[in-house]
Amino acid sequence: MSVFEKLIDKAAREVLKDCQPRTLFAPAEYILSMGGKRLRPLLTLMAADLFGKNAEEVIDPALAVEIFHNFSLVHDDLMDNADLRRGYPTVHKKWNENSAILSGDALVIEAYKYIAKVPAGVLPDILELFTTTAMEICKGQQYDMDFEQRLDVTEEEYVEMIRLKTAVLIACALKIGAIIAGAPAEDADLLYEFGINMGLAFQLKDDLLDVYGNPKTFGKKIGGDILCNKKTFLLIRALKNANDRQREELDRWLTATEYDPDEKIKFVKNIYDELNLKFAVENLIEKYYLASLDYLSSINIADDHKGDLITLAENLMYREK
Image (cartoon, rainbow, N blue to C red; front, side, top):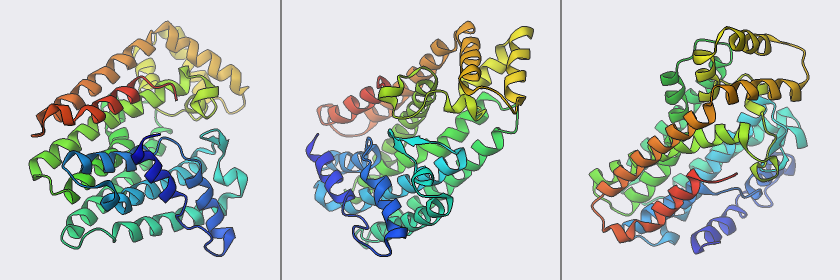
């Protein structure tokens, strides 16, 4: 664990600690204590460091991003009726649905308390960025739910949905660090675009792992997106490229109300294999990954100072969880 990761982990475990009533705050502490990648706050610290700012001076907004992210996970899991998050029972399974809703709300409020701690001179810009990002994430989540009821979702619509639902918070985390560090506006914007493209690649990888990952390392059950009829790139491309037999099979599984979950996952995955969709998604991941590196290389900072961000992006692209 790096110095930055230790700093984030220690600070995150103090959020809402021992607050009362425990029935409200214990679920919020629980989701924060799971750890996970801590990717977004790490990016805030790395972005600030890139422009010469001490990590301790940006830990509060970094925590705000992490707290907000965890709020979104609590509500996302509830909407998806997911059983596991990071290998642990989801909040609504460990407690109940009402606890998940209310503790999620508490996390949003706490996130804004931490954002409000940034220096007064940059607070308006950061607050506008953070609030815009929060609303974009809600839009992305709504599109994701809307798409579950449609069979005509396009690849372009899907990319826009994951840009909103996932990529914008990664980009926001980076830009917050850059703004606090006093980075030139052009460089802060380039770092934001680096985050958008890395976020798109990150979500595509997540979708791929949901079908082809190892459940022991992935931290949740494989095939969850298939069972929810989520319009991932895999399913959208499958519906587009399927022959008559494959389309008939897909339609049958997508409209079935009673089925064996393992059987549905097996049959849909088999169609993905027949259409060589794993390779297609891997190519798209590579496209966005390379685009992210192009934006990073354009930032007016010596290349040898960008090594940690390049390594992180590479690790995300080739991760197994």
